[in-house]
Image (cartoon, rainbow over all chains, first blue to last red):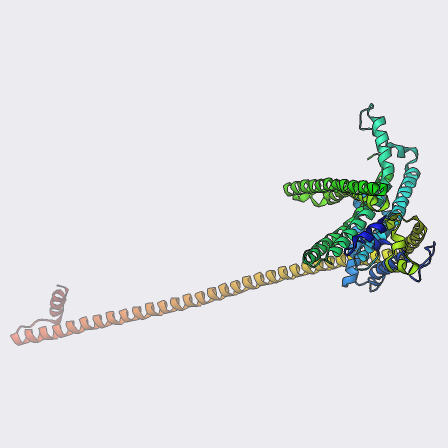
Length: 251
Length: 78
Length: 178
């Protein structure tokens, strides 16, 4: 259907979603499970960036940090404080895990902002895996740490007894909606921003409105830079919040 | 001909779904505006509540993203 | 549908499914590479990066703490030195005051002594002068008496009256007393 639409467009062809196509990097065979695709390429680039920042940047172990090292320390301190503030002292065991998620998302988002790049985090498959991993981990931690006491998360003692079953149903539903909203929030934000930039870029083909469209692209791009960081932050902080619920279900 | 009606319905639905994004915009504006007015009243407490504000923004924005997703699904996947 | 070449050119084959995000055939690939990526990042972070950054931060914290302690110590030393200096200064000032007072007292004593000596000398000279003046006065009185007696005896002799010396003396003495 989309193909037909495009055929009818004529001069102005909207292909806002084409940037998200997963295709093999070498040749064009089918996409198998271990095929080297653009997903592989951009994820590898994200890994390289993380390594460059956090490993190569701190290679000097300088007492007075270089610029890269101070950025690395800033990132470390940012996530560390977030975990400490939201989860508490006993959450610091899971700090590397949250740091991994945060660094991966932040670098994927920023790399996705490069022109002609591919945004791995705009794919529901990717974010859903991360969200499900968080969900399963948190649930397992909750039951391991608290046993049956973890059900206290759904049975709100502060509410009147009559309301408690209803609230329990709502809480259970919201608990299971978590991974859905958690994954779709990130993927949707990334997809929306990039698609909007692409749509404006298509308008730039019309001479009369191209200056306006270029301005709009610049504005949206600035917004997307902000959103890229905020979504990584939100993903990490929501993971922290879920972790806190698992560790202290009665709060 | 029938396909055209389905397509028309899908596009109209997509447009209607986009109104949900307006709601998300209002919601996010509400969250940030209230945070700001609170922060101006008591600036010393503001930094500690930054995380809460972002969580609030994320939740209200997620709903706008859902409607955007519905619009996209209607346009490209139905 | 277009040919294979056209597909490769505009990606129509892939996008014909609508949203690429819902193309389930690419899911295993993405999930596989995502898991590989996350595991690699996790290992790198937990084995190398995070311990190193934590170590650097701890080292910096330690350095800052020890630097602050050193600075505190130096400050204390400076304060002590200043205090010692102040004390020495006060002592020196007191010493100087004492010496000045001593010198002043000594000089005063000397001056007093000199004045006293001068006074004494003046007094003795005055007394001496007085004595000489008295002497001269007495001498003068004697001379006057002698002159008066001789003049009187001469006058009496010229008058032809015989008078003894004792009567003349008595008369002169009576006159001079008057």
